[in-house]
Amino acid sequence: MSVIEKIQSAGGKTAFSFELLPPLKGNGIETVYRTIDTLREFDPKYINITTHRSELVFREKSVGLFERVAERHRPGTVAIAAAIQNKYKIPVVPHIICSGFTREETEYALIDLQFLGITDLLLLRGDKGKHEKEFSPTGHRYATELQQQVNKFNQGFFLDGSQMKSKITPFSYGMACYPEKHEEAPNLESDLYYAKMKVDAGAEYLVTQMFFDNQKYFDFVAKCKENGIHVPVIPGIKPITLQNQMTVLPKIFHTDIPEAFATELRKCKSDAEAVEVGVEWCIQQARDLIAHGVPSIHFYSMMATQSVKRVAQAVY
Ligand code: FAD
Image (cartoon, rainbow, N blue to C red):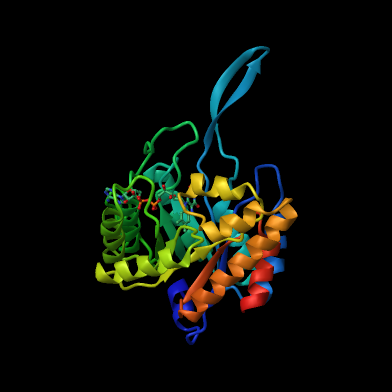
């Protein structure tokens, strides 16, 4: 059953899902399993696994002589997805990104995923490199171009136009959207134009960037409908766990922290207090979203597994 079928078959109950990151290179998979063990009691309908491009780092070649090399700090998305699916029998959604990958590398990943029986994906452009002022493509420039590659693959064709010899299970996929506008979009309407393009070309659902103000999400969903986007727009939310996330998250994710929330966070004397405020805010967000009948809530669980657990305990 694909992600969208799982959500739609939940009988009107808001589904629970979460996203996790592959461990940093050198660490084992146990942290991933610990996160899942902590959250599996809430019956996640699926688990997303992020993908991270390589970054340029300086490595010492000989004393005082450095070379700049590309290093992937969080490798292993496809393997981790397979390990999770095997161990927990929970559907997995690996993220496929353009950033840092060539079209050919993407094709190889799609072939691997077919072998592994993983056919749900989230298609994204990916973040720009830390050294880049603006995104510079190694393969596709936009998620919609990656989508065309996946669509062609689904029809049984490789990049070079040659036909596959055996039948595949076509990939089902979702894509990203931004209630507060993507940082590079000139305006929200332009972003919506491309969101519609994604849906018209086969995205079965959209998942939002994290937001802390539900009204922005509700307004966005209304605008999606006005613009002919009728697939589920899955809200992505995150409990804040550090006081400084009040300023860090808006910088990274271009999302506002509502003043009422910021006021409470400013009063915190420690991160332990910020955790409590973060959990409480996220519970209120989740309750309100559920009351509005959202099909699913997607939790960004990075550095927040215990908080997500407390939110899920309160609302599911
Ligand atoms: P796009 O849809 O390509 O959009 C990028 C910009 O180009 C937007 O401003 C859009 O309006 C515009 N645009 C879109 N299509 C076109 C077109 N055809 N022509 C001209 N302009 C266009 N990043 C990672 O590196 N790894 C992850 O695992 C990851 N997971 C994420 C999960 C979710 C749910 C979300 C919301 C984001 C995630 N990101 C991840 C971050 C994401 O990759 C960045 O936000 C990235 O900058 C944009 O990705 P996108 O797929 O929305 O890009």
